Image (cartoon, rainbow, N blue to C red; front, side, top):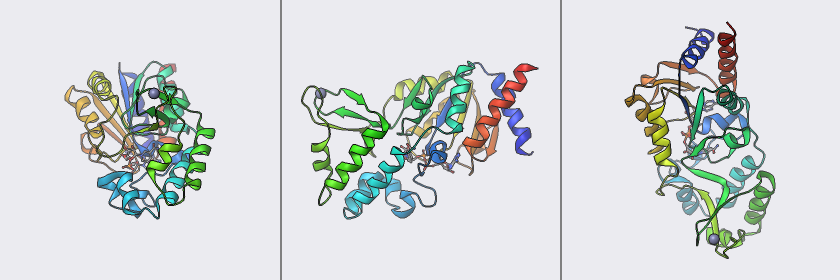
Length: 268
Ligand code: NAD
Ligand code: ZN
């Protein structure tokens, strides 16, 4: 079946759903200029140990490369803006279909696009968390990443400890850290995300390789309660075999087409 027929079928299935939840990964932000880690040219492509140990293991194995690695990540986050894929999810929420977005992304783009119910399993890189009182504070993208790239270029021999010492202090006087989850740390928002995955009757699986656990369990929760699954990805994933529809392509192109098809169905 060609994509256009699948797009109409996907829209039809969404129109028949009561409770749609989106589960998103790095792929949905690729068209915003933020590289995925695993694809060609991504960080794990260059430093394969990151795939099992995360960015902190890459930094500790290659301290000489750390400033350039972090600079690359922060620069792409600084310049990013929501793309048509993020915006389509906002439309689906406004139309009353999409109830929540469960994301593995740390880029704040779902919130910036305008989705109201966003669960961030791996935290948010635009947020700092106090190491003393736990208070979280979210910052404006551009000045925040300007500060971050400034801190990296100031540090002599690179040290995360030195960087943390330079971050803004909390109101309580405590030092802060980035509120993003690194490998081995507990994920955030998990109980709520699990509840949403079990409550939905349709899950959209968007731009995720499905290999990072426990996040990757979300489609299984949905499936165990009988939800239908639609996946959009240029490549097949471990989820594909369980999906009712697999749309091979980019979320920034296909999600807006699904929204158009859905509006056409509603007009009929
Ligand atoms: P991943 O890098 O493992 O996989 C990305 C997936 O996106 C792949 O399956 C790829 O085929 C697909 N993809 C690439 N371009 C796409 C497009 N235009 N449209 C749709 N799909 C596309 O990413 P992951 O599964 O999210 O896991 C990696 C972890 O790294 C995440 O948990 C996240 O914390 C972190 N990460 C976050 C960001 C971000 O915040 N934007 C970016 C990179 C990595
Ligand atoms: Zn504090």
